[in-house]
Length: 318
Image (tube, rainbow, N blue to C red; front, side):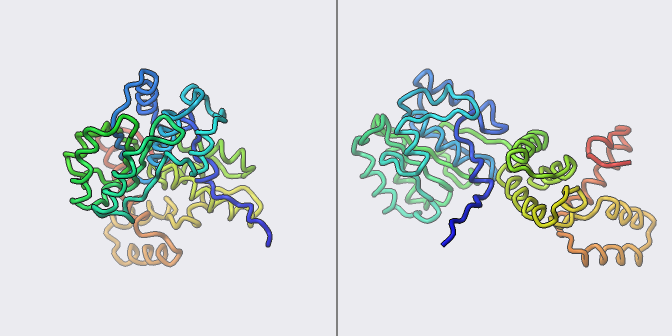
């Protein structure tokens, strides 16, 4: 059977060191400084929306504190070749356990985890437990973690990741060092997409990339997933992908059509407004994207009325 060569972009371009993380500079510097000074917390808590790099950061922390060389000094494109970093990168390090808390939510799972953590690491400096989607643990499971989190064995570190920090008991949060991963700016997302596009030899206009970045809503993974989808379309079309094509692929209404609809609404022309909206729906627009565009335009008009001409901020043509 022929080998499948295609690897999705979100995995292919997953950051391999701290310098490759996008838009999280303050968090990266804080973590690096704590490792340099050997002031490591008992547990890290990484929070933020999907696709900002929580699980990736957890793996990078695991690499950095167990590295046998100098992982934290690496620049973008430089990767440590020590045994520990290689094994963590390949998900087969005996002392780094990564679990999905969504599938192991009970007190028995946590008890088993705590029992196994009492033993010293086999080859690394620290035994590290990475718990993804930690907010899914049951109340009893959280209570079972409390004592171990406060006074863990000296060789044990916890790294928690979650998209819903409000569901985690305050007693757990207070025992962790919390880092909030922010939404990545459109500018940083576009720069990252341009860099990847160059590597993938794609042909997509900057306006189209900006639209992809806006649709991703601050998530690096979402932007790469959308780029993957567009690149497949480009290989079929064989020509430069423009903003209009991306709008059709992603089910986003053309701004001129949305403006035209808004104009008809302001004029009070009910019949034409409904007809225009029906046509847009028949063309396959996504209702959520359409509402976002409509609210964005209303916001722009309101800004223009109160603050003067700020049209350029929304990347809209004359």
